[in-house]
Length: 576
Image 1: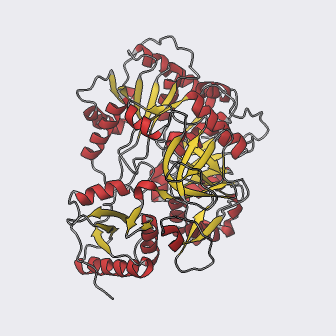
Image 2: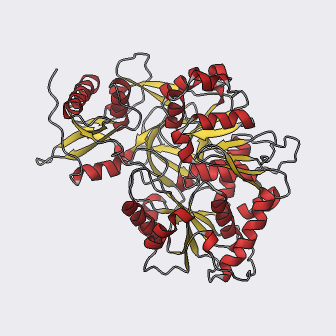
């Protein structure tokens, strides 16, 4: 099998299409396409854009002949394979609205996944559901008793005559993007064709400067906005070849990601901080010896809070393989804005701001710069707002704040969602009548760039102090032996007297009771010394802390599990 070429001499249209179906039609005139790999990193399908367009059009006619109608929603398990691509674009040609659904989480269990998929199908009011053959039975259970015209794998579709395809509507819905669920149950973000194409142009042309010599390599899940929009749809709209690796392949062997960049001359690839961290931790001399990462010009950062230390470690680890830290491109965005709201300039690298924690935690929440290592916090600058969009940091009374004043972030622009599908009350809470989105994030501006400090709902207020849970999580993960990124979840709960107390769930890799107790005591002592807080540290079993669809720790779900009694509280930490 020969992968589709990079084709640096081709003519590029820079995403200026009215619909993503129109973008695929133009990409079909090029020699580029998608190259799909297995969990072992082996190439299993080469799908030129011309072939994808032809197969998607044929499938679109069959879907309409099945009894679906333009505007109907279709749930699709977003596996990193050709069937997902064919089904997604068939929906575009048929005027249907795909709703990508996540794959089962590791160690999540069948019953929990089936229930989750069912809630998504109900939320999307879907009329059909497609899954890989291995998940057909689970999807059948999820859709039992619902008004579905079909549930199963594409290969199980009945033979039908092809129906006439409608003209795509530039103002119509393109897809439903389920939010990550980091603070609540996922809701379907209704993304229009116009919003998608506006974000694609802003990202690809004005942000990253995507050109003919570019090639995308990605392991990000296609049910998450960064994987779907940032990697797949933006690349397609610029006719860029894509090398697609399953997320599970990266988790098992992160070196496969870098090997693919090296072999194919990849120039654009994004990952959350934990992805770079994992790749650095799993590096070996034998792997480094064969890598050439000098082609990688956009090493994108997004999808979680950007942490500078793991990124410095990655750059140092792979410097000998040609990685240039100037390739780091920080970003900020969310599904409610299709994907991106800000990007740093290509070639600038990661810029950070170190601020005094005591000032940050006081009521005024000012980001006062400091060069002191003790009681300081380093934040990443996440870039300038994208073309045609606006960001404001507002205070408690709605006033726009000056630089370095921390407040709530609001956004407006052509990429914003139409609504949360079928959720008018939630939509009204998030979107104002004049078109401003309450992002739910806290941050400040600096030199025209946005700096994110955390989620408003995650903020812990103890004795008048504003404490960010990630500060405590990162302290424990960095300084307690045996803990890794994502092993600690911090939140607050009210005790029987109504007082707010801080809880830290710590994921242990040992079943020895004495060792778990010792770890809890060590973490509690550390957090008291570093942050001046009494924290109830609760050791939990391996793989017990829940994650969102993008692989981020879900504090809200962890808190719900704790409140429900899922974890046995640890003994109170002993004083040193």
